[in-house]
Length: 327
Image (tube, rainbow, N blue to C red; front, side):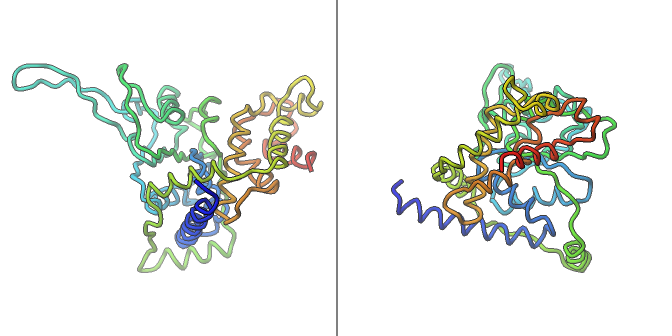
């Protein structure tokens, strides 16, 4: 695509994202940053893990985004007795009128464009791992046969950090497949006041489609073609590499970090920074975008040691230390 066509494509898609942000702001109150990060995840072609207490509109956000983006969406309520076949699908034995017996594949709910995995940490590790192949390779294998997923395909999973009884923490390999872990906090008083007025009356707000699935695929292609400056690349590499407890790392990193982010974190930061720039109608990302995205991209890709936890240090606080050191 030549430069004039790229600029025209950029203006068209950034205007659609602006409309999507405004529409979501009419039904999701006081969560502007959460909306931006979730839209950026989709624009970058990734998956997001939404972590927050009950009642913070995580489910409403996902369902509204499905309607806005014109995506075929399905929801799976993850429970301890959920089996991999309940997510991926299974084969059934059928007999024809002539007496021939054959297996027929019945697709599961993963065959959609937007999968909401509600309370994903309540399912067993076996069922959680059923999503690994679909999230990374965009197809599933059942009984040795490959089945391709629709395009685009995204997983928006939710997790409740309060109720830990009967849950199974997501393995590191699966956490790494999420482009971002988006922590959803309580809205401020003004936003909660607006929410009360808008949601307890006789009428409720809804959203209309702004995108089509083809528009989203165009946006994902454009994000990968957006320029990214050498200074931004250097900032991404410096930040990610500073979080690894290698032999030449700072003493505090070696002491407090059990394992650090891999190269996929650098890729995620690069794509997410460009996606945020597109959503905010800027033609290139900045170092400030990298700093803004550091926590959502890194917090689930590193773990602190017992020494850090014993001192009350959290992953977000440690990322703040890394950012302060890099400033």
